[in-house]
Image (cartoon, rainbow, N blue to C red; front, side, top):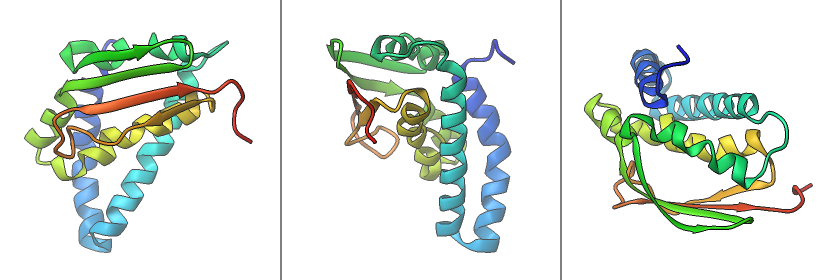
Length: 155
């Protein structure tokens, strides 16, 4: 399974999670179902990040991981700033959003994908912070990823 792109992994996960989510909505309502799904996905993102955060981490080692999410032309990005403390880029095309919409999961695509991003930072290195004000998944023209790397982690 290691040869699968992250895009394909997300498709498989969504195929499994769709009926589970639908059952949670039927039993507990949409708000609770979204809260549970969002929490579970965030915990999975933190755990995944910890497996990739081997040895010394930095903004550079994090940036080196971005091609994993781009595999299979899944994301088209435009880097707007990159230095020791900042890594900023805009996503111009997101096949994750396209895929979730095609699967009838566009309304929870942000829970299945976008919410992973900030949680991933937490698991990878607490000094890595993400600010994002908009996503394609939720209807914007592009996603604005703004990463900063703090010298010391917050207590």
